[in-house]
Length: 353
Image (cartoon, rainbow, N blue to C red):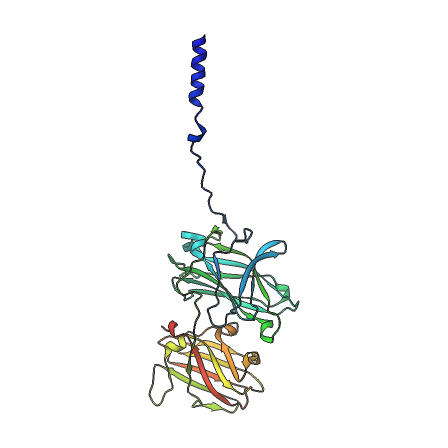
């Protein structure tokens, strides 16, 4: 009997391992994943404010704040310039980036002074370089349509590559700022990525910032003075043609690369009594468009009328200048008799094709 009890005690002692020798094994905690990025975790490391592109507000900022009882991303432009938010798609989605077919933003505009004014912009997708392969406009043009959704849907041949994938959310027209009033605060309540089957794709909000090389870098614009006065004109305004890639005596000279890399145009002039039609586009499959009755007085200051293409994207699409463009036309009407001293095209030399 004593032998049996001794054996039982010894067995029990063998089963009691020294706690100091027991490895403390813990399962790794996976990073949080969300089907809808709603900023509930307060994380924004996968985002970056781009202040390098011309026309962008250098004082742009973002923060996660409470809006209607829930977290949301607030973006401010204290100087009334454009807002540009870069989103690291690779970090958020990993190898699922190639499956993205649609991106949806729930957007809201706040007005610190209580006065509603329309705001608008666009969502762009980039892959490997800074050239957008897909873009869609968004707008909040009525107080009753606030909040709204900004939706970018990819075409059949549009898709992210293996690296350098980026979404840029931009607010380009912030109405009150043009008149010296308080700019609107742009609020993003959520971001959701969908595949071709309209299924939401999980996102890792612990991702850090990464983007194609050069994104957000400051762009230093050069000026190319256009030949003026033009050959042809009319009493109510003027028009002229430029033929890219020619330098003979009978044609105006303008390298098409300068036009392709252009960001805007400056007129050194006296202030007209009225502003009207402006057309700027490429001939040969007409690209560009026209703007009617736009109040360019908002863009005139100290003897210069400066029009940045991003400021007027709601009125016409950007120039699509290629080497095959046979001519470029600038036409203006309803300006009356005004004195124009110089016309200068603004372009980024580093971005020329």
